[in-house]
Length: 476
Ligand code: SF4
Ligand code: SF4
Image (tube, rainbow, N blue to C red; front, side):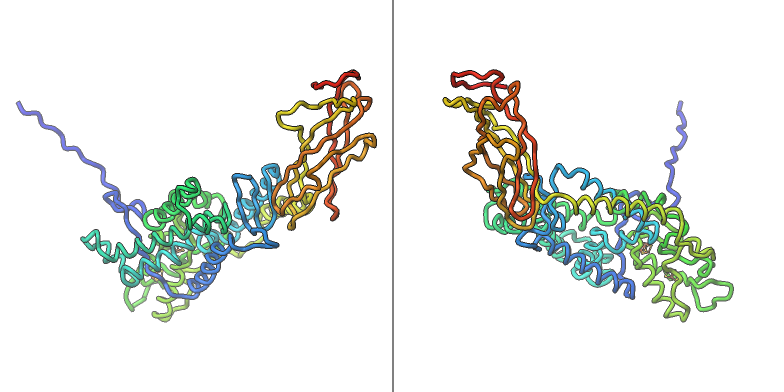
């Protein structure tokens, strides 16, 4: 007896569900055309300026110190000439919170201006890696032809990827210079990687990451990896400036010269052809839109050709498109600047009033807290650590302000410390046993550099609880 099995129907997607996904679930490669226009020209100028700044920053030195150096092994972070230490948690916290609020404010006012104009992902992709792709694969949409090319090892693909690899390694070394300085990178480049394996691995990983990102991952970074795009719906309101299609003017769309009953959109698809994330701006504000303005330039060129005013796709607010007036003053444009001023002002104040050196007094590592000399005097070994946050090398002296009977034996003082570095010196404080009460004597060390910096630190010295005649070693 035969059993009839009902047919299994696999659900089919209702067309393309994501701009970067084909209906069969495979990756849809986006090969945007470049739209020539005023906005693109402005973005190009800014993008090249930003790329040059990023490449130049590790080379910039002020007063013979790096302008930016994130020295993780010594945990000294020099940012725009100011040195931060792990103890500067408050300063770093204020800076980070200010940056976050600044991004909120920028988004509330200008939408995703950061993504389209300044984000390194967009800048490097659209103004360096994409042009290289067009160069090797043949003109504006040569990539489309290469996508259909059956020869996986076509020389054009090799040439493109080889160029990408060289640039990725160059960027990897530049990235490394942010952490170790350019001198070290140059020095390491002349040595075998086995002489500096850890930095080499970091550089190789970063170079590999750059190659993977710009050769393969591309717009996926904005769509699935970057959290900022996801915040957009919370950060934007109807008065935020966005790249938008004016549906009231454009619809109903339609091709052809006879425009009776049709809007301005000639349904040419140019705004879609230039979009680096593959979306159609006519579908309204979308999470994938990085506000790159390419569709604005493309549509303006079309409007010029058909003799209509520009601006069918333009910077606008959603309320503005509905004919409502612009309101710059609203809750978020008042609260964000106020919060930004508070946190960034606090950061600047804390930075401006911060001492130009950090002083720490420590006991001697591994030694007894004190020893008693044959004369009966008590000797405390002490170490002083000084971090020079100033812009020049300085020499630090140490004195005791409130113990005239004390003798300071300090063969390595004054302590010379380079700008942005720390120094450590050992010293001995010699006191008569009568100076101690219950085995303790508190003294005040004064540290100064002879150039205006002074700091006073109180320190507990240890001594014998009872005065004994015989020389001894002891603990408090
Ligand atoms: S819709 Fe326009 S502005 Fe948005 S990403 Fe695409 S081309 Fe850029
Ligand atoms: S480029 Fe302008 S006219 Fe052409 S489809 Fe897009 S919105 Fe319509």
